[in-house]
Image 1 (tube, helix red, strand yellow):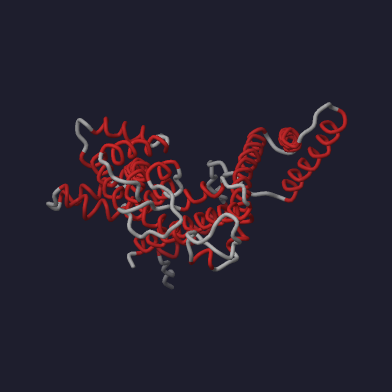
Image 2 (cartoon, rainbow, N blue to C red):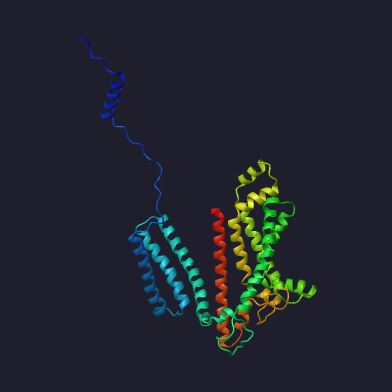
Length: 378
């Protein structure tokens, strides 16, 4: 009788199964330490923070207001914050190691200061809007000027149309001057360079801290006194340009540095000149961020009062011509009316300041939309 034949593949498979059943191969061990979740907060962590906050409040109230010879809201809140940090660190030390204690205390301090800044900003905006609500409730405040209204006239007469038009005209002229100059300066510093690049960069950095009154005095001396031009919106635009130019140039230079160098090398390798590389590769790539640089410049220039006070003059009439006659802006109108002792003028001043905040917000939203459309290529 013939012996049965065994398939070699089947035999090898049976041997492997037998070895796997008898020998237990240990699983590979991951030697990498598991990352600790720093952002996760349990119910105990939240309770520790709230308990420390309430406990610090009670302790400071007993010591500061009753036992110690101290008083005043500022000292009370400062003492409350320091006692809270100490209590929070002690409570955290009961359940966590030193690294977690440092992380929680640092996070509490940073969040407290961030909340303080946000609260201050909210109070400024809220107080301005609250004081200007009386003037903003009348439609004539947006459609008329102050040519027919005096300090004793009610809010039903007069408005800020002349200041709003003057602000827009002056800032548009300033943008037309500073945007090409600022971007051109950034291109020279980052793309071209040369022996004078360090000097130009030093001057630009120094001009970012230039007091606004110095810019106004410079235009007042050179344009009004030496050139003999009258006070006008054009002179005010030149003063605003002096303040906006270093901000846009410095911000644009930082933006151009972020553009990857590989894009420049690829463009040059394809035979493009340096000018074509900058115009068709570098600037389109940095266009969304350049819009942010422009926003910073506008935010610096649109709220300036000192340069406009010296160069634009003050008027209560609507003027569309920036080259002839005084042209008032919203900051200048706010400054002039806030000096009045009449409650009506003060309400108009706060109303103008509120509109200035809204104009800045609108410009910011428009710039962000343009930047977003540039990113998506639509």
